[in-house]
Length: 124
Length: 124
DNA sequence: GTGCGATATGCACCGCAATGCCTATCGAGG
DNA sequence: CCTCGATAGGCATTGCGGTGCATATCGCAC
Image 1 (cartoon, protein in one colour):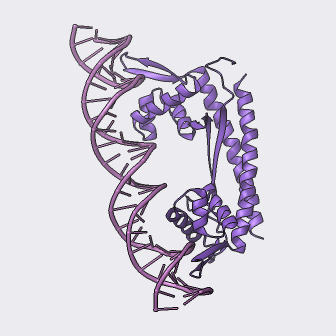
Image 2 (cartoon, rainbow over the protein chains, first blue to last red):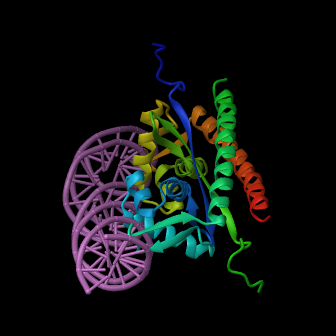
Image 3 (tube, rainbow over the protein chains, first blue to last red):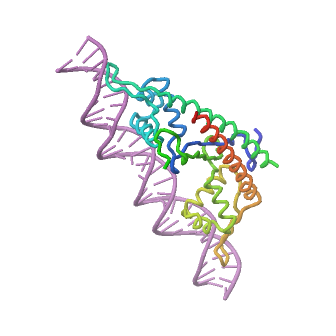
């Protein structure tokens, strides 16, 4: 082991959380993106919630909040039918899903760079 | 008013939160930076807490957590004396205070740029 | 050696957001 | 027309971070 107590160990990592606010409060972030992502691949909000390990109640509430705040319909919902119902991303939903991911990815890469510089400055 | 419900209004803004983790949990972020900042200009932890509008209890606990986790002494504490005591940033504390601010500033600038690109992609 | 005000720390309590429980409603299919 | 499973949503509960309270210790000045 390298043995030190004062310096910056290797398991110090940067954290970042991004979101999009309307009038100051967050209405879309990583959690809701994951939800869109899960719906996209599962075909229903319920299956998406189960897949993510969160309650349907929360998933539904979160999505509603985002849709109301942004005035966007992310999902095309269908109730009833033999399967009980289903949900899929709308055209605009897919667009958000795709572009937000890119936004997040760009920032993830950037935080790694900025943190490396920070660390460089600290260790001299 | 511009009148729309589906598009992206002008008061949609990006949010970002940065922090530094050790073994996965955050030990230093904006809150603790503000604390260092307040101590720097006030000269005591108590005055800093009052200045920030948080309880001394919390300020003290937060700082202790960060110091223990990182193995760094941010403050040089003095108990007793006619004034009761005081605290000031150590050399290393000032360095963190300065460099973390730069790290944060760089990311703030970056998120503005990335979000502008995101918005540009969305409105076409 | 007494008083004062800040550091130091445990513990009990409180407020609010997240979590979960329960119920209603919908509609294709048999 | 009844079943089934998912959407829809009200409402009770809980979990946890922050606040407050209490107590101890320190050391300079008087």
